Length: 101
Image (cartoon, rainbow, N blue to C red; front, side, top):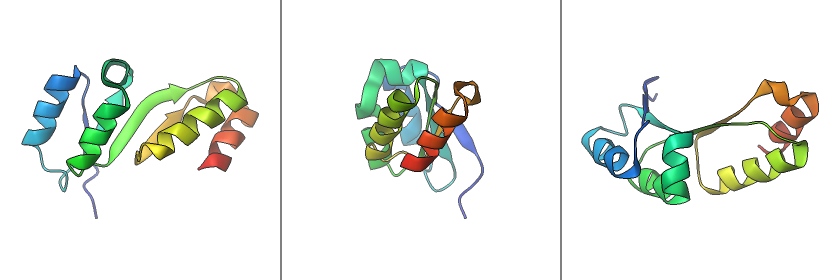
């Protein structure tokens, strides 16, 4: 069983990848938030996956249902382990996000 520890990579891409190379993907998972993802994009997710990490993409999706559907589909294609949606988006948005997963 994987460790429940999730390391928050709340920094720029270069520092995040340097830190990721110093930790063991068998001992923790990593979180990519809006700061890192906005700067580094999907390439950061790819590099973290290549290092063997389970990646939690913490973007708190909150939009109209179809937009969230497309965002969740794209996130799944990146190979993330976990994502989140903001419950204030409503029941239909949550249903659509769950449906895609």
